[in-house]
Image (tube, rainbow, N blue to C red; front, side):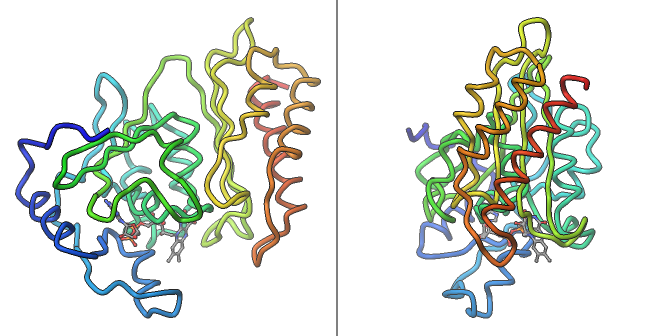
Length: 284
Ligand SMILES: Cc1cc2nc3c(=O)[nH]c(=O)nc-3n(C[C@H](O)[C@H](O)[C@H](O)COP(=O)(O)OP(=O)(O)OC[C@H]3O[C@@H](n4cnc5c(N)ncnc54)[C@H](O)[C@@H]3O)c2cc1C
């Protein structure tokens, strides 16, 4: 639902909103996705671009009472170097470290990964597993969209053409744990064959709670695996539970064959990653 129009919109952001409202315009942040599309060989090239490099309102990493807030223009290098991210969101730091290599990490941004909405975007399962909220804005005002509602179809998001991603808020809850794993052809410059983030709360005597199993590269969008989450929810960390969760995940996801991998490989690897992450969490 649209919020009140932003009253104190900083000048560069205000101007950016004006440009976007004036007609089809493609924002450019780090340019690591947009510049690949600029030749038009991969689809229509953008006719007008909007450089976000001076929009400082999209920068910064802050710890606020309701979570860790990262500006859309935060680069992967900034995430890797951030003491706040390392303390409160180490899974995102791990994800950032797997993206491209140093050059891409220096330019590529969190907001660009989200807006690009590739099913293989490596930060996206982390957003889903963290219950992250994405703040978007434009001339009509600002609104927060849950990560789980943001990726609506293959490379389609809840973002309107005249809106920008402003920041991402990751709730920080004591006792919440998250693990991340990416499998690609190499350790750098590799698009994921399977990427996964798993989170839960308080693996004490009550077992797993608030479980989130989120994956990329196994569907048209980054997804959660609700059937697998239900197997784990409230269950004790036993070998039987972990086996059942992995079997459920392999049956639940519907990956495709493509140039990077086969559906069978993706299903098998997703199940093994989950098995390993849960066994590690259970301590055996
Ligand atoms: C060699 C190479 C390796 C790569 N490796 C990986 C990898 O391992 N994992 C991975 O996930 N990705 C990878 N990528 C893809 C890319 O680097 C990431 O998706 C990156 O996060 C994009 O960020 P950017 O700032 O460069 O986006 P840009 O290219 O500037 O923009 C990408 C899209 O987002 C839109 N956009 C950007 N910022 C905003 C905003 N604030 N609001 C609204 N829309 C916005 C743009 O209009 C565009 O549609 C790789 C790319 C290259 C070229």
